[in-house]
Amino acid sequence: MPSKKFTLFKIVRTTVQFIAFIILNACILGVCERITIPLPILYPSTVPTTMFLGGFDVIQYRISHAIFPFIALGIFIVVAATVGRAFCGWVCPFGFLQDLMSYIGYKKVTVSKGAHNFLKQIKYMVLFLTILMVGIVGVLTAQDRGKEFIDALGYYAYQPFTPFSPSETFFTVIPKIVSYITSNPSQLRVLLDPMLLMDLIEVQEPILVFRIVFLGILLTLMFFIPRFWCRYLCPMGALMATLGSEYSLLTIKRNIVRCIECEACSKVCPMQIPVLKVLKEKGKLMDSECIKCMDCMFICPENALSITVME
Image 1: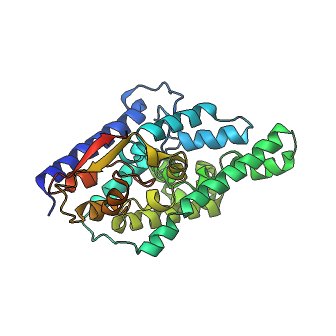
Image 2: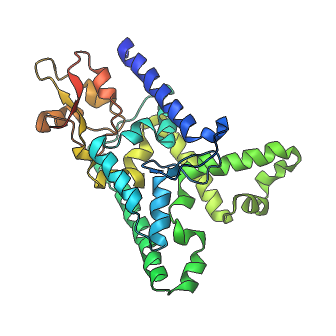
Image 3: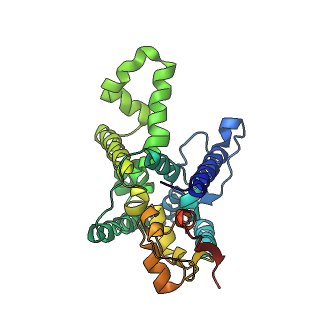
């Protein structure tokens, strides 16, 4: 049974995540002027209520148009160096959704160490393939070549990952369908008419079906495996890890006198980091998978963990 301290902390963090979601979607409150600052989160720029730009969308778009993303990468490097992947743990809307799913009282599954270490690498492959694809398009664009190839790819030439992003499916595609049906109750048949759906969502039918099915599978997995997407598939998380989030100034340290090595910190980690092992080996929680959620710190029965600034 979680302590009152841990329960209160979860309420506080959930509240912060909710406030962050409202700020990101300030157009809901009537503040609709978009701020062109890319944030290190996986949030589609196609959401009509959003004020900020999803960082990965910006990276894809600029590279594919033969423009090096200096500003976006500069922001990401500064964030990675200071607070690591804290935006994943406290700001990202899709991370917030995953946390809400994990609060539902199903028994959580611990992925075997071998499978976990293997699956963690998939997000780096997604990142690599995406950058490779937009890089090729960017080179062709810079050389004014391959127009037929780029035209054939269409939307996928400039943002090859975004059409498959579960974040865009959840926050853009599904709301479009719901909004259409709500505004046109007589058009409920849109759900059964692939042609109407394609016109509405502007994607090919096989991709739309894949997106909905993929999102459904992910939502199911999130019930049982906390932060499944963040752990294994998110290219934005992979990019932040690649940029050195492991060595961020903000980190967590252990008081070796107070620590009773109960492993509560490791068991509660949504990213399945062996927290105690890392702390004993490195002295601080230096791990590229850490999203700075601080669950480990507040679950500790002996208050042996504390936030600190890397020296």
